[in-house]
Image (tube, rainbow, N blue to C red):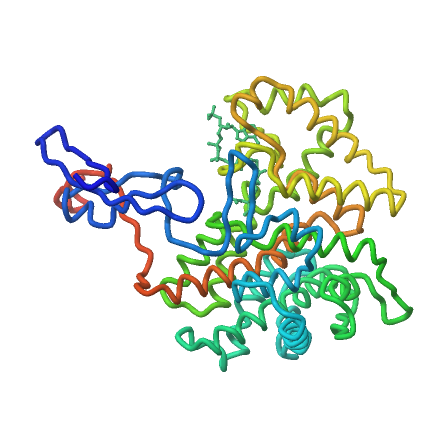
Length: 430
Ligand code: SDX
């Protein structure tokens, strides 16, 4: 038997098959089971994909045991400390860090795509003012394919690049307008002389009636938040974008599907759910009661912002965002009681046998809500902020999927446990 194979034996008939092992740069190898059904007549079974690699990728590597996160090989700690979100966008899309000239050209390209078609402004008027901004994002980002037909040829590299530029550039404008629409205040235009995060904050909080200068500490914190949320391997929303894109749907429609998946409180909606949970706890003296609820298997309550499918150690992003949080609260002289509760909750949970045994640590969502509250971003916008950061990850993973040598539509099978074959019974005989 070749050394790089696994033998699977069906003990019901003694038949064995050799399954090739494929090894990557880092992380667990995979068993290549693509021929398994043809050779054994059996499917693999893995609801939730706990043991399934859905693709090969060069974009992100996560070591959940060691709390490692690399974007194109670069540690997230170094990128958060030394890079900028726009440079991280370049890195994720093109695969390497840009030279000075390459970055200047890329930044100029992005800043000249920040405006959106005036027809798209009217699109907002169809929504109720109290619509959740994520509902607006799903609709408006999907509608980009109703305005930018010239860059939808998924088999053309230049079209894919233009779509990526448009998405990165326009998503902050759309997000800020979703917020402005909910408040009934006018839509500002992007200011191309501002940096990416600065421009977003300006579109969120400026008023035509007065000068608005973005606090550089806040702009830096916003930029770090975007970097930390940019990419995360085959999470639920990225897998959704890949699956939608595998049908050869256009990139905006595929990303819109990803936005829908991110909205869930088990995924990107967790940052909003964390704030709701901290408000529910209300006082540090109630923490133990809620920790007990989270441990009770008969109680659906979970500690939002805790646990992760991959990280069985502290989420490296949570460490960085916690530090950023302290800096912003200090800069703004904000004394947020929810931050006190969060730190106390973290301290109690990390010492609790249940959380230690199940390896439940704070994830990126645990502190991101608190820092956004300090910046003045409303809770309903937290997952929209996540969307702005993750858009580059989605579109980079989409491109990697669509340019695979053998690009196949994603179509999983199932274990059927329904009714046996039976004949139709006319209604008067039932
Ligand atoms: C994100 O995948 C990604 O990369 C996502 C993300 C990204 O950047 O894209 O990192 C962003 O989505 C972060 C996660 C945000 N979600 C939350 O904070 C919601 C709270 N967390 C849980 O819902 C849960 O931890 C998940 C969904 C994050 C992970 O769920 P898994 O991997 O399916 O784990 P599980 O639900 O099977 O839990 C394993 C055990 C269970 O107990 P048993 O059934 O074994 O007795 O741990 C328990 C769970 O009950 N558990 C928790 C818990 N999370 C898991 N118990 C209490 N509180 C929690 N938060």
